[in-house]
Amino acid sequence: MTPTPKPLRVLTGINTTGTPHLGNYVGSIRAAVRASRQPGVQSFYFLADLHALIKCHEPARIQRSTLEIAASWLAAGLDPEHVIFYRQSDIPEIPELCWLLTCVTGKGLLNRAHAYKAAIDKNAATGTEPDDGVTAGLFMYPVLMAADILMFQAHKVPVGRDQVQHLEMARDIAASFNHLYGGHLVLPEADVDDNVALLPGLDGRKMSKSYDNTIALFAPRAVMHKQIMGIVTDSRGPGEPKDTEGSALYAIYRAFADDDESARFARAFANGISWADAKQQLFERIEQELEPMRARYEHFMQHPDEVEVVLKAGADKARAIATPFLDTLRHAVGLRNLTQQARPARAAVHPDKSGLPNFKQYREKDGLFYFKLVASDGAVLLQSKGFTAPRAAGQAVAKLRTGGPTALPEFAAVLQHPASASAKAALALLYALQHASGAAQ
Ligand code: TRP
Image 1 (cartoon, helix red, strand yellow):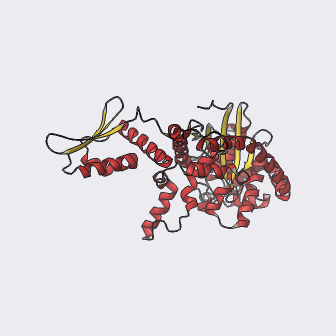
Image 2 (cartoon, helix red, strand yellow; image 1 turned 90 degrees about the vertical axis):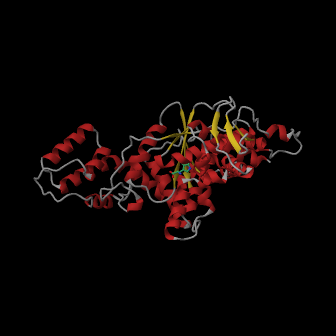
Image 3 (cartoon, rainbow, N blue to C red; image 1 turned 120 degrees about the horizontal axis):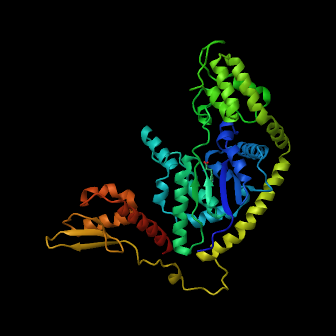
């Protein structure tokens, strides 16, 4: 194993689609900027513009959104001196690593990605071709994301809950690579913060672009005011006590104010503050935090050249790490200078199969054909019922070996016991090795 790089490396990608809204600020930008100032941590923040190409085929929007997002993070206080802040497409090592990883990634692994499955299911629901409208880019999304992370040997990856599966896949992919080529890649961990405030939007549902209920983060002051005045409330008039419970207005206030301020705001609700006054107070409280940032945001939007300089400097820092590391990985897989002595390839790449669970097929006295999955310590993990034809048993074994635990339900009826957790783990391991060593041949 390569020694764990020190200090702790934290890395996260920011999608460059759309304009950031208050929900993004409260849910990720604000906490990330704070965390990036922690001593003893090396933080990587990047604009995932290669990922953006998957969803957006409008060049001007890609460019605009990249600028807006970069300007937002800088305005919110991300310090490019202290963190490595770069644009994914400035790092050619990432797509190159993506290919190395693609060649050790089971297609079946990608078939199970939530986003891909959702697209397939949607097509099934409308009776269209399963892959209709699905680009290979969407299918490959998890591999590119793994390359983002593994390129910098990140230990922790702060993400939303919806990204946890992608992190698991990055670990699987890294494990396959390491198994074949030596322990070069760090297995990253998702860092999900369930305490961050989920901000309600204008209509009280979660603030989200897809609900069209967002308040733009750095809209001009007058626009922000108008949007806040548009937050949905109940019909209680001035003087009538109001509930903080379930009030979007109160929840948004709470996300900006400290405990004392929030308690005061709650008392005003109980004392019958008018909705108009409450909205005005909310607006002023948000402005207190955002006004200075908005000025910086507007400055960056007017001076894209300055943002470009920041990102290029970030890319230099990132590439100072990525270029030599990719050289190591290229060498590891055999993309080498031909004058270097070639090592016996087989020995280098052939995985050591001792200590692995093993399928055994055999015939019993009853004349039937059986199989079992046996752990290296001899424990029987799966035991089949008898098959009349050896071929049927062999096919079941082959499917379980190549399909991993997801193939299990199909064979539940031919097993003597329901599969235990250790049987599933053993199948997952065999599956990982199967596609990894399959790729090596
Ligand atoms: N997929 C992430 C999201 O939708 C964005 C992203 C791309 C990312 N590459 C990454 C996040 C690498 C963390 C690490 O939010």
